Length: 166
Length: 466
Image (cartoon, rainbow over all chains, first blue to last red; front, side, top):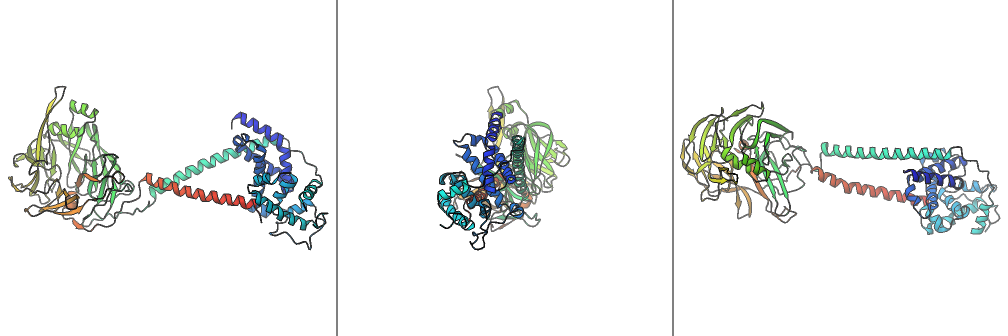
């Protein structure tokens, strides 16, 4: 990488590191893991910096890289073995027996990674459907349907929430 | 739970205290990124090297695409009744040596596109290989009488060595001649150990070679070339007193040679000394190759034409060459009565050799089959019969032209007593290297496509979890 590109990359990384790590934390729920996600995403960004920096919206690219790194780690054999929290169920757990005291982070941890990513991007990062679809690399229709599944699962995981009965 | 409620829920999530970034975080990222880039480049380079090594190994060592090992049989050789057509996929001698060869020939056409191959036809099956040591030339070559080697000389420039291609191993060796000049190979002894060649060096030759004049060496050699005998095993040469020389035929026992010098035919000993003149009918001389019959009693003759030449620089001389345009260009005489033709076969266009002591083999056009053919002609005056045909299809120049055989040479000792058999499917050996790599491209592209599709599907599945 040429010196001017590396300088621009450094400036971008320094300016966006905290915000990106926050997004990473919302995706994974752990600051340590968020730090790793951020580092991996920035390493990937460095590799493609010349192309990304020329884009209209580098942030969208970087967000997509971050989500990809998160999803790849969640799908790897290693993460399934060593992850300290429960494996997301194939289907959301039934309301019966669900601990009503689960807070939001705990509920998110019970979701499948893709569903969690959809909710985080849309309702925590404030992206619209199109932006979320871009970050996830899928269609807007998929984002909508996955959002519906994720919300239904969240409703069951958080029955005590004020809107949970709806 | 509607969108607003969800937004409120996330907004109201317990605020967390963000830990600060570790000191030197950006530098750590930069270091990791640089290492990652170096590692990826090294991996890509290693993968490329591995692919080249594997591809090269497959190319060099693998069985190729359709190649089979040729059994170096020592039994009775067979001449197929149909000679396979042109194929650019014919493998090379160096890739898959054919063992012993019965036929050496140039094949192709070049009216518009250059589609030409130097080929050998195996003696022990329908084995065809490209003589890759002579990829773009023909003529200045000899096939050993036992079919196990080919001698190659450079007809386009002066040289100081000849090359020997071992058809059993594919190995090519260079044998120094001890002097430099225009070299034209004439004959190999029956054991393949002694090469009779002509060598010429005249000022006019330099000029014509520089201008790319065709057949300059053989043309000047027929007027000025000296006969030399070279032992291919020891590298020792025996100079002869025969100058000029245009054709040589070893006797079946290798002890003598019939030598054509100008319009005279002489018997020359293995020591290079003239023994006696063979007084063949006026105008005739021995055929360029394989004139001596396998039983040692007959000589095949052809009409020799004398041509004078002169150059602008004042050079003058004579050239001698076979002329088949005359009425009866070929004949056969007995050595013990050389002045009397016993037969003048009328279907011979190019004399190739002897099928037996009573039948000769020639290359002539078969007007019935409308293609070139190998003909057997009895020396007792009986009718000639075609024994093998070349392909009549338009396979040369991308299907636009018929292929033509050039400069055909036979392995004289193998030909004697060879059977004519029904041709089988041609064994062309492994594809030439370029075609193998070309074939690998779509395979690799398909593999890459599969991997790409799998990767995209995996990404989509990540975006659409169940």
